Image (tube, rainbow, N blue to C red; front, side, top):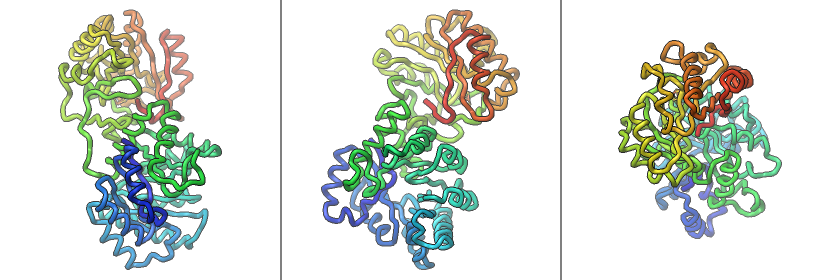
Length: 456
Ligand code: SF4
C-alpha cells in the first residue's frame, strides 16, 4: 500500500497513455499519490486528475524555474485553487540555484508568496531546494513553516541537513536518485531520517530509479525506492509502505487517518501498545512529535485491557517475539502485562519487555523476580553512564530515576533474566562508550546502541 508523495501525472509526458499508466499504478497497489503542479497549467491539470481518480490528490504551485513569471494574478489564482478540498498542499515552490532559470530575488519573492498562501490556508508546502539549502531553511524558518507544515521533496542534503529540516518540523521525501550508485550521501540521509518524518516519491516522469534510468519514470517505479529504503533501514518492504502511507495521510491531512493500534508489527516482532503514560519525558521520544511509529498509529483513546492486548496479538507463535512497549512505560501496568505475558508463554510465544526500569519504584517492591518465567528478555533504557546525563536526556518525573534504573538492571540480572541495557546515541550528550563500559563491566549485562530518531 505505498503512497507516492510527489509525481507529475499532470505532465504532458503522460498525455498519450494516461489511462494505461493509471491502470498499472492501481495494479501495483499504489493507494495514494500527489500530482504536484509546477505552473498554472499543470496545477489546474492536477486538480482535474484529483476529480477523475479517487486515489489522486493535487498540489498547486509554480516551480522556482518559472518564478520570474509569478505576478499578483498568479498568486491570486493559486490562492483560490489552493482552498479547494482536493488540493492538499501548496507547491512546488522553493529555490533552485543549480539552474538559476529565474533571478534569485524573483525566486525568493515567489517562495515567500507560496508560503503565505500555505499559512493562510493551513496547508503544507512542498519545497524544491537545489544548491540553496541555507537560504531555503532561513526563509522557511522566517516564515514559520512549522505552523502549517511541509516537506522537502527530492531531498538532496546531507545527514546534518536532515537534522536542520527536522528542527523546522518538516517531512523529508526521497526520490529515485537515492538509488544511483554515486548517491551514498543521500542514502546516509535516508537512514538518518526518522520514520515519522519520512516520505517517498517518484517525481515521475523525472528521476527514474536504477535500474531503469533512461526510461520514462512513473509511480509504479516507487517499488525500487521502497526496496532500497527497507534494505538500508533494516525493515521489511511492508514496514516502509505502511510508514509512507501513514505519513502521507498525516502531512497532507487527507482525512483517511488510521485508528490507533493495540498491537503493531515491525519486521517479524509484534509490539504491544501497553500505555500512553510514562514516568519520563525523554526529549527525543517520538510520542511528542508524531502519532505514529514506523507507520503505525499508536494514539489510543484509552489503555487497552489485558483481553484486548492478547486478542490483538493473534497467534503468538506466528511472530519472533511479543514486545511490551508502546507510547509509555509498560510497567505502569504491571498486573496487566504479567497477565498477558503468562498467556503468551502458555501459548508458546516469546516475550520481551521494553522498559525504562522504573517498575520497582512504581510498585514499591523489587518486581524483577515476578518477571521470571514470564519474560524472556528485558531491554532497559539506561541512556547514560551517570545521573546528570540521564536527567538531561530523559527528564524523569520521579526522584533518583537513574539510580532506580540501575538498581532494576542489577535486580533483573540477579533474578536470572536476560538483560540488555540500551542507550540512544544522542550526539554531544550521551557518551556511548562510557555507557557501554558501565553496562558491560559494572553491571555485567548486554549493551545495545539505538540510533537517535529511529524508533522500532
Ligand atoms: S521512557 Fe520511553 S515512552 Fe517514556 S518518554 Fe522516554 S522514550 Fe518515551
